[in-house]
Length: 119
Image (cartoon, rainbow, N blue to C red):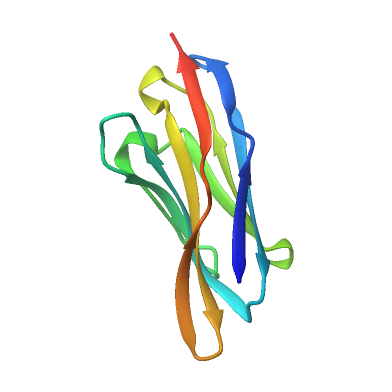
């Protein structure tokens, strides 16, 4: 099995920064895409940013210029640097990864980490 464990969430004032990390562990041959999603109370889960194994990135319009996704393939880790945080960024942040096991790929999710931005 594969586990994704997020860390780095917390409470921060508007304008502050946080860095989220997500480590994948378990039985896997390789990891393709990795990403961060978030879900605010009463809202659907939404994409924040994704990154391919080659380093190509994609961001939601709402976070462009403020958030940066990166990954360390040797450590099976994806990061999300969040700057200039706004109260509307408050949500539970989840990481996911497409893990190759044998000839198939499976998508795994972490348990989520709370980010709260106070005004």
